[in-house]
Amino acid sequence: MSNLVKLYSPFDMEISHGQGCYIYDVEGNGYLDMFSGIGVNVLGYGDEDVQTAISEKLNRYIHLSNFFVDPQAEKVAQKLCSHFDPGGGVIFSNSGTEANEAAIKLLRKNDPSKKIVVAFEKSFHGRTMGSLSITGKSVITRDFKPLVPNVKILPFHDSELVSGFLKKHGSEISGVILEFIQGAGGVVEVDPHIIDLLDKSREKFKFCIVADEIQSGLGRTGKFFAFQHYNFQPDIITIAKALGGGLPLGAVLISEEYKHIFKPGDHGSTFAPNPLALSAAMVVLSKINKALMEQVEQLGKYARNFLQKNLPPSCVVRGKGLMIGVKTPVNSLSIKQKCFERKMLINTLGEDLVRLLPPLVIDKNTLGEGLELLCEVVRTLMNQTK
View 1: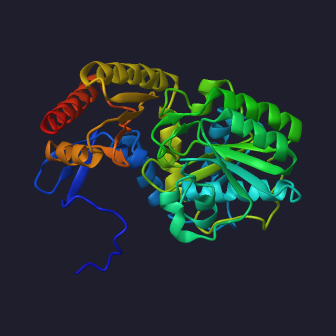
View 2: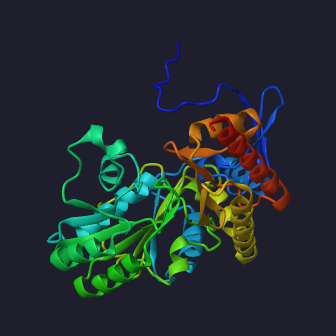
View 3: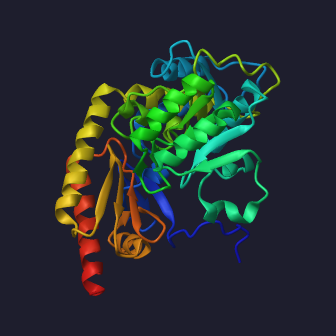
C-alpha cells in the first residue's frame, strides 16, 4: 500500500537518470522525452553548466531568509526585465501558480474599486484557489466551488461577445489575464481581434493585462515571450517552468508603471527565490539566446510541416516553435501508451489531443525520429479502428 495520495497516473517504471533529451529507467532503457518534464527541462537532462552552478551554490548555502538578498536575484531580475521593460520589477515565487496568485493580488490592490478580473475559457492558470478561479476549465474547477468571486470567464474566440462585455463593464475591470497560446487548452492561439479589443479597452478603461507565459515563455515558441508574436505589450507577465532549470522557481514581471503597487508586507515567500534555483536560472537565461530561439523557430516549422505531411488528413497540427499540438480522431491516451511502449514520452490533453514540448536544445535528427514514431503510432491506431 502506498502512502502517496493518487493525483496522477504515473508509468510503472523507476527512473535511474536523465541525459540530454532522454530519461533512463533502472534497467537501462532510454526514453525520448518529447515533453521536457512538463515543459521544464528546456536544456534537457544533465546540463553540465546547470549542475555546476547548483553545486557551487550548494557548497555555500542552500537557503537564505528574506533578511538578505542573494546577488543573483538582482541579476536574474535584470535579465528578465531586459526582455520586457528595463525599468520594471520582479517578484519571485516557487511556481507558476504562486506567480499567478501574486498577479491577482496586484490587480486587486491597484484599484480596489474595480472588482472584476477577466479570464478565458479553456485557460489554465493553476490549482490554488485564486489561480483556480481564473482557470476556464470546468472539469478542473467544478468540485471546488465556491471559487474566488468577481471573476468573469469569457470565450477565447468570440470577439463580438468579448467586445460587448468590455463596453458594458470596462470601468469595473481591474485586469485581464490570458495565455497568448493556451497550453492545457489545446495549444490554441488567441484571436487577434480580441488582442486589439483588449489593447483599446485597456487604454480607455485603464485596467492591467497579465500575460501568463508560464508554459509558452522563455523561448518555447521561438521568441522569448509568446506575446511578442502579436506586437503586444502586457503590463504584467507570469513565468515559471523552464526558469529554474529543473528547480522550482517562478516570477512575476511588472512594468515600471505598476511595479510600486506592492509595499513591504503586501506579499512574500519563505522560500522564494531559492538560491540554488537562482543559480540554475542564470544558466538557463544565458542559454536562451537569439541563436537558440532562431533554432527553435526553424525546428518548429520543420516539425509542423513534417506532421502535416505524414499524419492522416483528419489530424490537425497547430502551435508555434516547439510548442505543438496535434488534434487526432484517435484516442490520445492510446497514442500516449503506444509511444511509451516504443520508448517515447508525450503528453495528452483530453481524449483527442497530443501535446509536444521537447527540450529546446533537441537536434533535428532526434526531433525527426520522435515525430516519425508519433506518426507511425497514429497511423497504426487509425488503421485498427477502421
